[in-house]
Length: 173
Image (cartoon, rainbow, N blue to C red):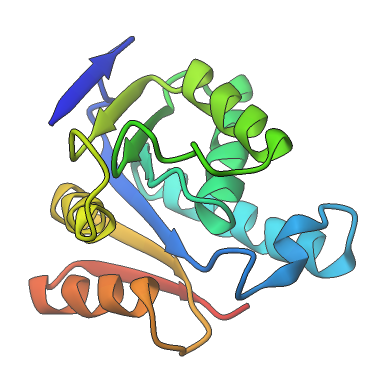
């Protein structure tokens, strides 16, 4: 594991994000859509509640979709509250290698503005996403999940969090 810290994590509670990618929720690729704006508003309101409950350090897995949206929300909120910190927890250094140019650009901006970057595997392996997800659950006090009930990595992450007794906040898209 490799970690780059620009500033240390806050002393408050830790919140990790999990959720679907645009493949499952196509409107995540359309920020101008009503669905995207509504979900962003719901996430922003819930994150505000979490901040008022003591969450100050936020973990994003850096994936397209919910991970990226939540990281962007935290960066917006950090402009008004500099005590908030964002940690990008990447499954491997080449996470965005096969993404489109626009997606790579957003990802690079998130990494530039993150307080901490953690890579949970040194290279891509079939298990690296799973390792990243478990790392985030193990590191958080609360897991904020956007989940529609379908099979996949989000369900597996939620199952692991339940097994560990992690507090979960669920948003249905």
